[in-house]
Structure formats: C-alpha cells, structure tokens
Length: 350
Image (cartoon, rainbow, N blue to C red; front, side, top):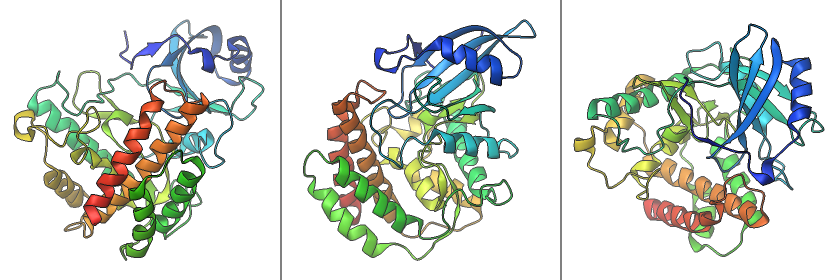
C-alpha cells in the first residue's frame, strides 16, 4: 500500500461536484475508467489539495493529486495553479524531482475553480525538522538531500527547459519587496511597526549581486516528499510562489528554521549534535560547495528579506481566514506569526 500524507473527508467549504470532475476526466485523462474517489489533504494554507484515486483501463487503481484555487475573492497575483503546472511540467526532464503533471483545467465550470492533476508520489512528509522517528544519520542524510535538490534547481537553465519567460530577469528583490509591501498593505488588519521599518529599510540596502535562476519560493522540509523508506527527497511540492528570481533568497528562506523557535517549522533551539542535523553554517557551506561559490555575503539581509516576505504571506493567510476562504482552519493564528516574523527580520538588520 503506498504511503502518502494524511487525508480527511473533503471539507465543507471546499466541496465540489465530483460527478462533473468524473465526466471531465473521462474525456481528458488518458486511460481513465472511473471509480473516482476524492479526499482532502489535511495541511496547506493556500491552494486546496486533494487525493484522487481512480480505476484505469489496465484494471488497476491509480492515485493522483488535484490542486485548485481556493473559493472566494482572491488577490490577482496569488493562487496561480497554472504556473505550478507549467513549472513542474518543465522540470520533469531535469534532475529536480517533481510529480509527473497530467492535465490543467482552466474551465471553472467543471469544479468551480481552475485546477491541475498530477501523479501522487508515494513517500513521507516530515514537517518537523527534529524528525523523531529518524536516526541521527537519517536526519543528516535528509537535510543533505534537501540541500542537494535545491542546488540542482538553481543550476537549471530556465531557457533550456522552456521557462525563459517564467519571470522577469534581474532586480528580483526590488520587485518582490514592492509586491509584498503592496499585498501586505491591501490585507493588513492591524499595525505592525517592524513591517513599516522593513518596508523602508530593505529597498535601500539591496545587495549588488543580482543573479537570475528558477526559485521555488517556499522551499522547506514540509514541501518535500521523502522516499517511503530511504533518507532522500523524491519530489518537491507546492510551486505556487516559484518564478525566475534570486537563488540566494531561496536558500535563505530554506534556512529560516534555524532562526524560528516554534515547531514544527522552527528548530533554532534544538541540539543539532544529538539530532545529527547540520548547523546553519554547515548547511550554507554545503550549498556553497554545490554551487561553486566561497560564501554568501550579506547573509542576514537575505534572511530578513525572506522573513519580511513570509510575514506578508502570513498576513494574507490570516485575512483569508477571517473571510472564511482559507484552506486551513488554523489560519486565524497567523496574525501572531506575521508580527513575530517581522520583528525577527528587523532584529537581524537593525
């Protein structure tokens, strides 16, 4: 029996017409025969994600994952599942592990929102970095594989894989600061002094180094599928925030757990030696070796930038929670997260 992340019955606010989906798949999915079953994954704040199982013409059941936009009024630049579909399709021919994409449906009349379908990849989602069920050697190997996969992504030539127009070239940080400052202002529910300070300081201190590559945008352990039994990454998930951008922002975001305390995403206070986890310096050094660079100057800037962006995202999740259209019932807790991330970012650069 394949191993997947936890699922629950489809939540009331995310229910859709399964019969309509069945009719659509019978016309557009190769080898589809019916017997459709749908459940919802119990994690995620943004695009609702569903486990789909169906009979195929070879007589076997096949498992898929469906990602769709959430219901309700949405920010224009968010929840672009068509971009997710495009990037995983483009990366399928590289050494970056992704789930095989099957189809994209832009017709909202089918289930109410745009969606795409990909193969379900068996494996484990190990959200907690302390990974209590793993040995020190296994934890070390999983972190090293996470580091290796990110470096592989940053080495992909966007033009070669058909993503030369997936985003703009250069000035990524400046553009991201403008975007998230604007989005935060649109979704703000209370005053956060640290966000105002960062909004003014960060644009004035952008490092001169300005490379362009494919960036994931939310690269962390919880968005990776680990092999069912081996300590290695077999698929990268949740490409909603991917674009052409600054790779050093991606590795900095990946390292935010070293600065956040609250589990499962934060692990700043764990005993790295006892758990077998690399320190932040060791993890960054491994990435630098893989990328052929001696170090990362202005490291704290990239961390602060990533935290600022994460605070703005948290504010958006909180606002959607108040409006009742977030895919995670815990989203209302994000208000505190937005403030804490902004204050931590300001402490790193002030």
